[in-house]
Image (cartoon, rainbow, N blue to C red; front, side, top):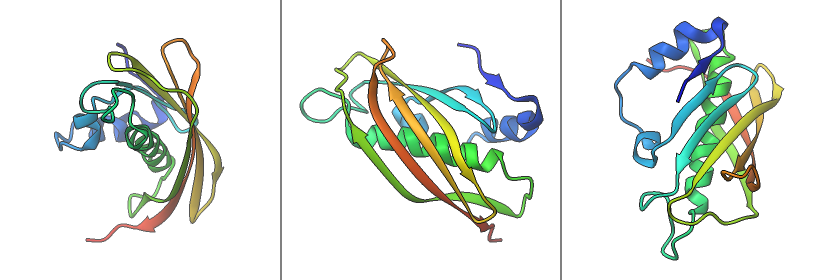
Length: 146
């Protein structure tokens, strides 16, 4: 799969991608498809790492995908290296199940980009493009420590 990166954030995005630090996204199998200030996109397989005990996509995995996209998207919008974006609140409505062996794609877009908060909407869709989860994530823009 080809990764599309907005030219204005390429250096910042590639630095993040090449850091080598393992994170929750690695454990869940999240693969970025698009990194930009206006739209983030990533896919996640429905595997034993992302299902609940009844063999369908766990809502918590969907929320992790949503917050990952929103957090990185907000961070890419920050020009000041002394600040970062962290999750403040997230909600999610799970409207369709996805069984083991499937795949979902998250598409995140900013609704508000302020100096102190960002709000992003995240749609998670199945392989047929049907809505699985709709989420909204509010991020706090904070000064980096250390």
